Image (tube, rainbow, N blue to C red; front, side, top):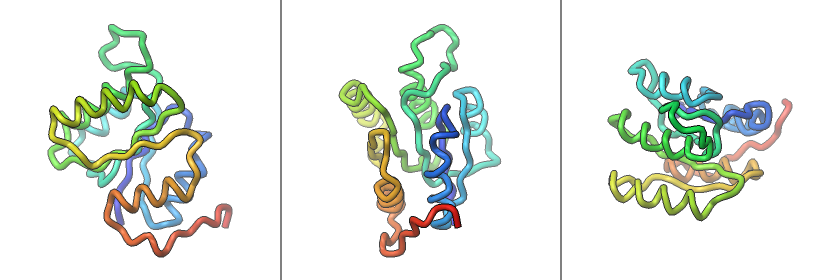
Length: 149
């Protein structure tokens, strides 16, 4: 079973995504703050195959900046700096996609990291699931989309 870390400050909105991932045999851990994300990422207790990261998550770790829009970029760098075997990453954003893609591309080049995709909210369930399976090199043939079983 593949392990996914889902980082989003609006967990009530992402519960259908979590449910669909779990129905498709993924183990999903959810985190809703930058600080909690830092702790779990730096912990040797957890190993993640993929991280789904809301680029507009509230809260910054450096506590000097009140610009919450940069917290996703901060966490991306934190992941690359603190996880030895880097997981694939799905970046999710509602806007500022050009700004985010440019920054992610610059950081990815610097860190020689290429296992990522972008999705724009609201994300269709099937698109999220197929993106996750594609990044993890899993056969997309069996996709379960029946919520509320």
